[in-house]
Image 1: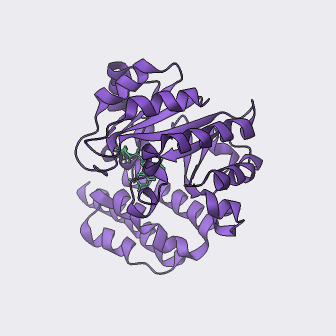
Image 2 (image 1 turned 120 degrees about the vertical axis):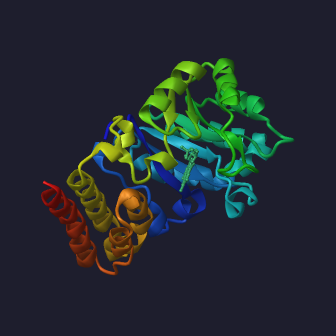
Length: 288
Ligand SMILES: Cc1cc2nc3c(=O)[nH]c(=O)nc-3n(C[C@H](O)[C@H](O)[C@H](O)COP(=O)(O)O)c2cc1C
C-alpha cells in the first residue's frame, strides 16, 4: 500500500532464546514485506544476545531493540521503556547486537522521550544509542508515563534529529500522508512511523482517502487482510481480526459492522463480508 518499510511486533527475547515456537513464529515474514525490521525486547543482556542469533538467522533488513513499550508488565520489568532508566544496560545490549549482527545487518533502537515528565532524558539516550553503534533511531515523542495520551512532542524529536548523525524516524500522531510529509519537512526527520492511524486504513501510506473509496474496494482489502491472517494464525484469526474489522468498518452502517464483529468461523466472516460488499451495490442501484 506504499509503506517504505515494516516493523514486526516486538518479540520477547527470553522466549526466543528459550526456543518457544510461538515466539519464533512471531518472527516470520514474507519476502514482499521487505525491507523489514525485526524488533525484540528484554531486560537481560544474555537473552538479548541469544535471541539475536535466532533473529539474524531470519535475515531481517534491520534488527531493532524496543526501548519504548509503556505496558506495565514490560516497562516495570525493566524492558521496553524501562531501559530508559538503565542506559548502561541498554548500551551494552546495543553494542552486543551490533557485534553479533556484523557489518551486513544494521541495528536500530526505538525509544520514548523519557520515563516521565521529571525524567525526559531523550538527549542522553539518543547520544548513547548512537555511541553504542546503532545505525538508526526511532523516537516516539511521549514519555512512558504518557502512554498514548496527550500530544506527541515533535520538538523533542526534532532536537534528537539535530543532535545525532544517524537517521532519525519520528513517531506519534501521524494522521495522514500529507501530515507525514509536513512533519518530515517541519521537523527535519528522515521518515515517520504510522501506528494507530494505519489500523483499518492501510491506504494512508499512498495518500488515498478511505472515505473516497467504493465499498467493494474496501471489502476486497479487508478480505485479503483477513485471508492472510487466516493463513498465518489459523481459525483463531476470526477473533484476532475483530480489532481490524471494527476499524475498517468504522463508516459502515452499524448492523453491518456488528455482523462482521460477531462471526465465529472464517466462512461466516467471509459470507458477512460479501453481504457488506453487495449491500452497497444494492443501495447504489436503488438510488439510480
Ligand atoms: C496496538 C499497538 C501496538 C504497538 N506495538 C508496538 C511494538 O510492538 N513495537 C513498537 O516499537 N511500538 C509499538 N507501538 C507504538 C507505535 O509504534 C507508535 O510509536 C505509537 O503508537 C505512536 O504512534 P501513533 O500515534 O502513530 O500510533 C504500538 C502501538 C499500538 C497502538
